[in-house]
Length: 551
Image (tube, rainbow, N blue to C red; front, side, top):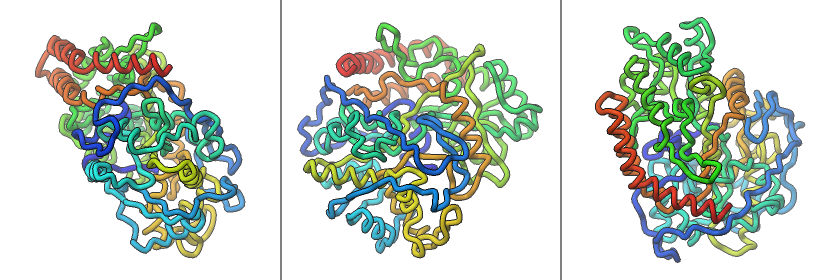
């Protein structure tokens, strides 16, 4: 259910990618053979309709219901008798399926009985390249530069490669005619993927891949409700900034080594829980659009200055862990686990952290308005990645989409059970909720990463029962589903956006200096003006052009 990242692709990078849109993995690289010659792609004046969402409603009833936003909860796996068939007819075409996918696990054995078994069911032979997360960027660049591109390639939506629109246009198939609008209904399991997830796969107006779904919630203020209630006598439910400040001061005890919040440092600056606190003050999800269509970046708003001043106040009160400016995400998780800090900004999957000490359950602080009233929760990309197909014949494209449709079988289907449990007697024993992976299954199924090529919408279910954690995540999603704030430029293309990292880092550095008391607000405003001229105005013009052309 969760994705752990290491090295260059950290969870901090993932959250930044979700908030900022599609970002570059590194310095510009060669795009050998690209028809664009490496120049910025032209903003398209056409846009493919997103695939029609047709949810699959048959199958086992969840313990807690879901919808296109909230994940349903299944405390245990369904009985075999409850499973349904989601794919009928021909799947593959007998040709070998080559792929390039990221992995955060040890690679499977060379003699992979699981891939052989699924290959027999789907009429294909799988030949996948498994790339560790910390070397994915470099090996992706080598793969594309050498023009040695497999049939299916995973693009990480939180860390896109340099000049990705040109790369996709030159080397990968435009899938719009196969998936746009009602065309996706030829692939029912793909039509079952919620609309929000498809936005990350529509690049410059064209659909270039099939997304690996995630719930649309961005960052969550993870908390320890047990300790907060023990220290304050009430569950954490602040209704405005003053109540949040009171909560933070009430649970902080520097002498005891306990702090309310842990932010974290990173290459792009310090994250002072900005996505949570900024949303409280009405800071846009990167960009805001007026009724007249004018775009304003969050850095340009008075709400951003209010956010900085409030964060500075919290820092001066001593409620942030003192190591925040240099704290690593993994260390912050440790602090949450051992009660050193009681709140930390993380992804929603952190609510299902199975590494927590036994009996400890985390929750999420429900967002609120700074002066009261409803809160806001930034909507993320709602996908981890998308599977793009190398250019080939229409017949081969359709065969590969049938294959991905099979791999995207929803929870509660016979196909999904096969993809997570393999062959009975070889990869698992028992059945239904009592199915247990064998040693061979443990070595091959997850490591084979077929879910990177295609996967059904994520549900709240884990192999080890953690009912209360599942309930906490579902409760958070239910309470905040109507608070989601979209980024209005999401899905539109700005050629300059990938080249703004240095300007943003410089501005973030001044903001950090202000929080730490090293500079004043006038310097922040001056740095903001520099950022606008160096980056903001360029992106605004390009996004506005794309929106005008494609809307």
